[in-house]
Length: 508
Image 1 (cartoon, helix red, strand yellow):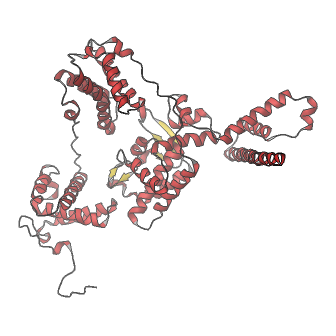
Image 2: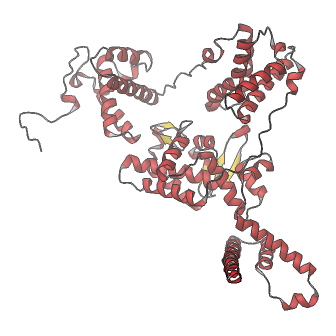
Image 3: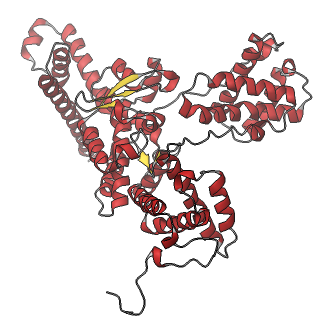
């Protein structure tokens, strides 16, 4: 209820702008008024808060009033740049100016979406990587990056090109600063060793410098194939020993904490918080249950999901390989719950996971999981979810080749580096194998007198699993095996408790 009858309630169309260059709402073109209302609705559906929506709305309203032309005639780059330069003349704080800048960026995005104008591709920051290089060296690096980029998908080309430039130019920049090189033939193992010593002294890991060496040797082979003279000894430089890669899976109790925290956010009453929580739960379970990579979560499209077949197609993933992964009941339920709040399909990109009208950024999953982990008091990263997927599947009885196929690994050794056997699984395998050993060593009369041990029962269960079973029978066998493993663990714990008691009795 309005307590000031002489003062009209706040409404954006009742505001008379102080700037005479900006037309008031009532003087706008009717088409622009409807466009502005749709812009605010679009922001709201994208998950923006009311305060952000109002701030972005002010920037858009002043830009439309300043430009004073049909919205389809507005150029998202040049016209909005003029509007931004005009808004900078207003006596507002730097924080407000920054909000206006972001609001105009969203307005440009909405204009491109409504008018079907694709954004101009951003050029690679060549100068940032090659600015200090001589012309011949910059040209060689540029040709190599362009050559490699032909094998990458369009939506990852810029990202991977920058990663390649980073790893390749770091050693080249150091060598250029510490030695006189007139051509690629001047790059020798002695220069690499000097660079390596300094990088290791700075605290770089062998993994990082090995990646630098890998890209440097690829670049040299590329130039050698073009007939350029290259130091042959440089191509034979050995990489550093990285040591054994231990599995980085997340402990079960921490996985339960993370999942409970995400589910709590998904059940929140606040619309924006609930939408984010439901989306986070969907990609979290896809990585944990189906072993998706972060880039595969970001690239997953709605058309790739088949809920009837309970599977998802991963297209042109690492190494431009396609594969099919299977969806668990929990993943399907989480995906369907997210689709309800995702937004209209025709108004959003084709990617499955959308945050504020855009596909997930490179660091979204990492930042969100870090925030949730800190809230739970644990430490976890998205890639650890893949390790946990391999560990959980292997310990549940899945063959290692099946796990390799699900994760999309080329080599089985990579899969074995992801997975960690639980003590219970090792014990069960030992009991199963040892029961067979005992059976072969036992005398005929012993085979009849002694009851079957847990290891023998596990051996029978494993033999049963080799047969042709339907889905229900497979589930029953899995439950039986899990029960036997739990029983073996219980007996082992009882033995651990019994031994100290016997020691105490002996000492007394």
